[in-house]
Length: 83
Image (cartoon, rainbow, N blue to C red; front, side):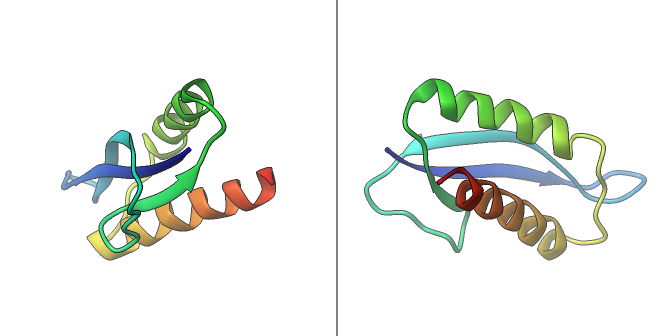
């Protein structure tokens, strides 16, 4: 199943943070506003969301573009290694 990943990028005292990762099943992926990825099950998708929260929870970024591209690259690389 293909999912569309979205998340919030919020300002903080030490830089931008990424949180509230959410995946929605989709038939029309949009990599401009999020990241499209494929998972075999809802459980696999939920596991990825937990890993994203843990991985990016403490990281800070200098701007929105950097945060977006870093998360996008992380997810796409992780999915390419899976297959």
